[in-house]
Length: 174
Image (cartoon, rainbow, N blue to C red):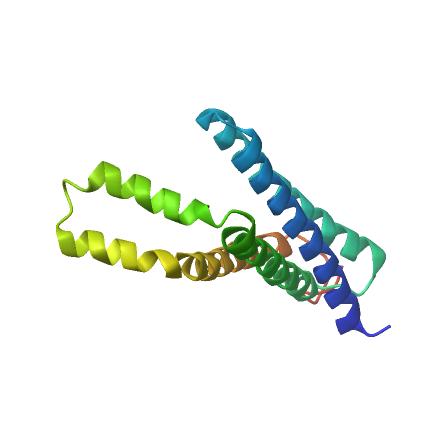
């Protein structure tokens, strides 16, 4: 099997797992949790779980194939990051457009009620005019944020996996 296919396969499977994990935690937080501190705790658990899943994928890739370098684990992690970002951002967009279409307008209405006295009429009108575009804006923000976070995590973890051999002559040798 081709090395690129192996890396792509590990990355895509991990991205699918990470995307599903983020969607599950997001749905749990949004629909089941009413407490702010419990939502924050769930966010922390999701954050730690994503790090753990990415790390375990890299360790598994290193364990299954002898010739894996840190650049290979980085590539697999970057594929996982981008694919999970696409899955999560796509679900968020679908949720805002089809599952809970009133979510955005309710949030904007709440903001306008609380801050209308501080906003002039132009600012309030602009905020109301922005409402139809918010799902797409949130989609792109989620996509960029999740991709950058995952690529940064992949960069950090790939420096340690595979473990460098201090007695080897080359940097990539195990």
